[in-house]
Image (cartoon, rainbow, N blue to C red; front, side, top):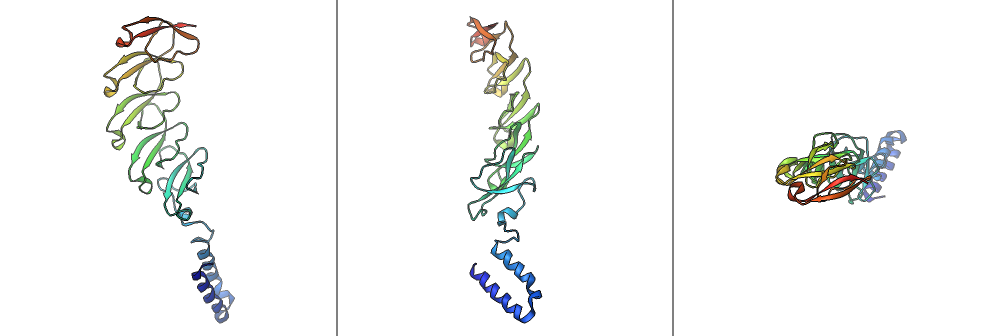
Length: 240
């Protein structure tokens, strides 16, 4: 018990003699609050605070604690956990703002950035992946999606990328994943804002494929053409 608590205790016990036990019930509750760190339940100040960005419905955890599967980090308190720092964890929801360093739940992408968010450490908006959505640089690409466009000034200056569901004949940016079952069939150096673009097609016999294209199961590469794929060279796809 701290010195202040002892002083309060002495005052209360003196009050018992002067006013009776009933008059000191509220004061005893106050002592319990003081000893337990500021709340009647014993929560730290960090645990009692509302989360930044979304609201309640989660839990505070100390720095270094694992994040529960399906949860993201939405608040930060530097003074929490006795000065070690604490983080607020909540179930992921579409459009939720999260703190820098938060995990990205499967099926979600990062769609906006706020340098001042999450108590000044930076905040990122998490959204469910959908066809045509613009995402920030560094965002994961959801399974079945490809990257089709680039905006250098997007996402508050850090750059943004358009995500689309893969389909036969779609043009994608350099660095885009290749969805299983697809191959790369053409190249355009000036595409995707100058970073280069690649055509994706559903694998089938007779397609000419570019260097670096995957060869899906059940197929093989055969004849080679020097001038194929706009001068990069190409191999024709055949059934294995």
